[in-house]
Length: 257
Ligand SMILES: NS(=O)(=O)c1ccc(B(O)O)cc1
Ligand SMILES: [Zn+2]
Image (tube, rainbow, N blue to C red; front, side, top):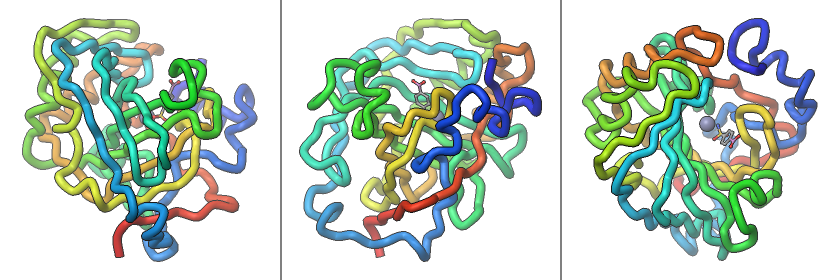
């Protein structure tokens, strides 16, 4: 089964998933000077999130990340998404064994300690996440860089429960509210966007990526809680990030000058 170890990690995924060497793979290194400011596509209708706070939080250790399943209606529109409405399905993270690595996207080669992904599917065109996941305009993922600093209060419901989700397959429902809006950076106007893929197998090329420039802070303890999770091979779930893939014939757009 695929993972992040030498024997089953990103360099081996092409064996079972040949699209790993495709034309629009993710993540990528964002070369800030090469990104193109594109006011008409992006400036005209600002990216907008309209999330409903979850009344209970469904956490899953799926063997390669910690995932929070969303049950309420949460909508992402605007920016590079045209007129389509994308529905929030889940969020999860990628992180390193140490603070110097862990994000999937990099910025001029800089790696952050972790990266949060809010995964949405195109509910204007498709009937479900499973239907959308293989379509070129099926998904939109918000990428939020995470850097060590003060604790993120909204993330506490996840980090405080990692100890109970230690092993792969573990699930739990926590009776507390969670507002995904509060997981976003304060500045959601400045971002890079490009057409890419899932960053784990099956690596489908179905994602419009939106990566915010401003990182959010998590405390050392919150990052340690992630590193103490155990993956499907029984190892510490750490360094569960795919290194940048080739940009090929793609342009990265930015909403700021
Ligand atoms: N890491 S990611 O956001 O690109 C992602 C999202 C969903 C799935 B999946 O549902 O298999 C895989 C990867
Ligand atoms: Zn991800």
